[in-house]
Image (cartoon, rainbow, N blue to C red; front, top):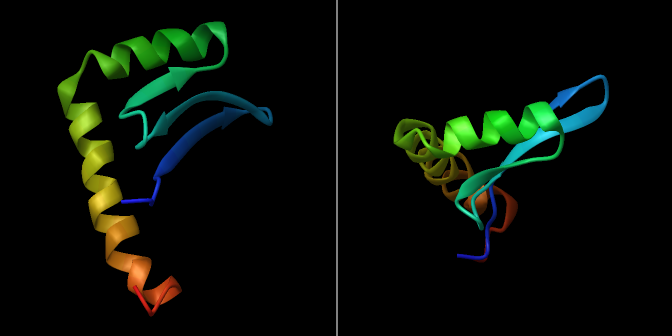
Length: 69
């Protein structure tokens, strides 16, 4: 439950927007990124896909990184 999945999009070394599983939504950091975050937050399939990525990637591999969990 303490695992966080973060997916960031960058352009020219500048972070445009990010999905954070702890927030459960996208957050924009530039004018373009805010528009992209709004679009993706209003589309349930984007949110469901990112939440599924947390389940598939993070929770699946937690045993590899933390064998005592």
